[in-house]
Length: 253
Image (spheres, rainbow, N blue to C red):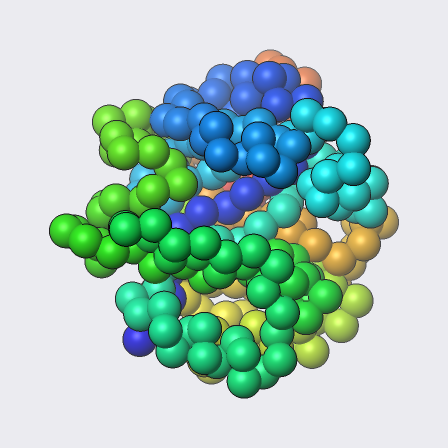
């Protein structure tokens, strides 16, 4: 069995402003806006980054889960680590055996979804999904949450891939072990969960914010252009790390 990092979700109070920053800095474009998230009191935008997807959601009404998450973490930032698997049934069985609660799940003819409760995983929302049908396991294959033609919106002049998600936690060793149990993937060094195409790294809370998805690592085709664009928009920059939509993005080549 394999597990692939397929999508990173961020949460923001101001979707249009964050969308402009993402497009201008990373050189990407919106591939889809999912009308289905309105059920949860949200609107969103999704952007291809290579064969993966960056999503931003924002509340449209009071009392949403995303809104409470924004309050708990003190503003915009990382929200969910979303993975793709090759066989959903044993993943569901594993989650049940571990007593991990599923907060949301659905199934369509071409997609199976399972979102796990962050209080049972620790660190962040952890989602495990499966694609069904033609090309389902291709790295550049279909991904229903991003729409049916997301590949036509890929812009890779500046960004190539998301190569790591960085989760900060009060007890990163414990949270790393929990994610490893759920994923059935051994940790490589006690604090790194190696997925098929990226790592999930665990670290201490060191930025004054409670535990959550604190950063991602992005492999770049034009890092200098990203840094210039971030600086021109007044975004925080430190070395080759920028802060965009409340999340630290480490830019690597």
